[in-house]
Each structure stands twice: as C-alpha cells, then as structure tokens.
Length: 142
Image (cartoon, rainbow, N blue to C red; front, side):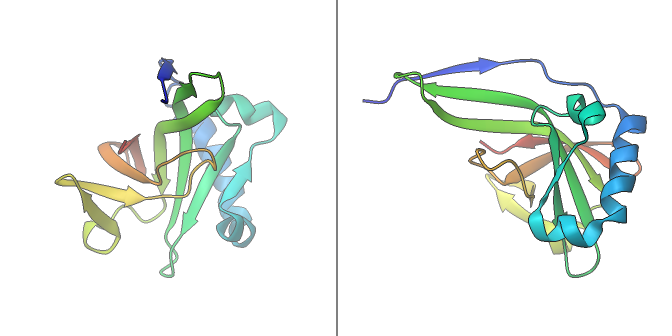
C-alpha cells in the first residue's frame, strides 16, 4: 500500500525584469536550449525558480516558450522516498499563444504542453491568466 504525504509552499513571485534577462540569454543561445529543453540559471539567478533552471519548448514555426517553475508540490511515499513533484509557475511565449495550433483539451480546459523538470509527472499546463504581453501564469494539470 502506498501512503502519500505532501508539502507545499506559496511559491516565488513574478519578477518580470529579472525573468526577461533570462529570456534574453535563452533566446541568444536558442539552438542549444531548444534541443536540450533546459537552461540552467547562473549562480546569481538560480533563486528565480525552485529548480534553478528554466525549461525551453520550441516549435517548428520559431515559437519559443520558456517555463519558469516557481512553485512545487512535493509528494512523498510512506517510506520517505520522493514519489513525484508537480510544478506551477510563469510562462514566456515569444509569439504569444495561438490556441488553434498549440492547445489541447484536458478535462474540458485548454492546456499547453511544455518541457519541464525531469521529476515532474506532468508536461501539460493550464494557462490561468495573462500577466503582461508575452507573459502567462500557468498551473499543473494534476
């Protein structure tokens, strides 16, 4: 029998100016990060996300999405071994979000598939609200 416990924390705030510095660095090296899906933040910026990294998703039409995981829900097994983690955060999209081309439906809601941390069970996120041009708040579908 698997018993689960969870630990949550309120998360990190939306820091648009600092996030845009990261976006500029990712866009400058886009080909490298599009293939790997991950951009490890330099030491002085690791505090911007709960994983110390951002996750890059690129499409054939030159769209670049950058996921900043700023909140995590940790699930632990009865034996103290991590079971899975679920992430929420902020999304930068260089061309905005085009629903017809990039959204799928999950439980009657529009979701977008993004690269994310390896220990996250979900790669599909709800787009909760638009924060600013190119910026969105996203939450895990699980």
